[in-house]
Image 1 (cartoon, one colour):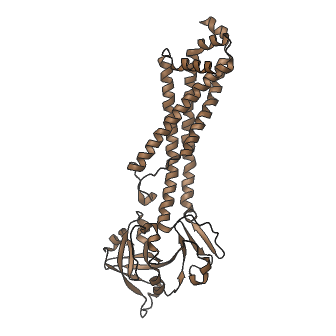
Image 2 (tube, one colour):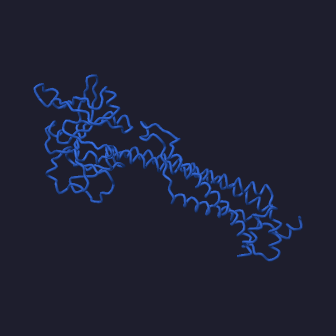
Image 3 (tube, one colour):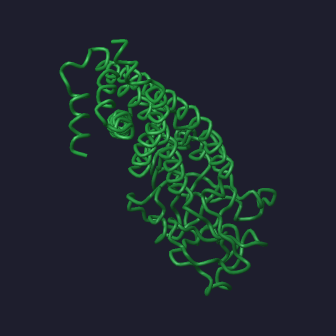
Length: 382
């Protein structure tokens, strides 16, 4: 084994190796590294984008909601034993929001004053949501031409045709302006006190369900309730991401495989340049299996160096992208304002191992050239 390593060192590190041999090895390493880096960057982008979308949607609506199978609203006091751990009561109602200059159809989200800061969208706001308070977005405030501290009128659609009904509308003070970054969401979603919303719509103690802010709930919901998480709620969106994932992954995998053909060029140069040395070694009794190991080692070393360099390049690219966001995208369309990337160490290790395995296959294919040549004939030609 020591003799074999001595031969490998003499063959690859020798100063007498031609410039063509060295340049071919360098090109092989660079092409393979760029292919591996591209594949790792793309896979990291898809994983990061999917994770960021899920987190963004969870921040807005919670990770999951628990609702009644047969009723849009139900009396929460009847199901005290079924309240999930960490569940946040909420009530959802449709209404008309009006200022002096404009109006907007909205969705009212009612939360208890003690629960509003548990929603990730308001986690750092230190908000006290009293009965006369309302939270709207900056986008909606601009449309209605109002500022924080101004009052807005909320109209109950169910009572608009009853002029004598005192619950037709109510004035609430803007307590806080939020910004989710998604215009369509910001224009519709408004937050008020749960108890007040129940009184205004005359649905005492009734709620739409519970919101869970994380995925830690391990308890299966009992009948008649069901849980729907962010991936189920936006199934079409995540199906679209998965649909795009595989064609892109396949195309960049083909690029990596094509870069492996550079290994054949490097092994061919190795054979042509060192075939006289191989022939002499073969005549002096070095078995073909040992000579074959030289080809395999050459291929594995190039694959290891190329794939490792590619992983390093991809890691640096992903690190700087997540830090400086130089690849920007439209937040209104993609929910995030930059392309997030998630570097996966295990996937990177698999890419290196795959490269080594694939290089071994290519090296064994190139051994047929050596086996077909008679060492004595090769020496005579020299």
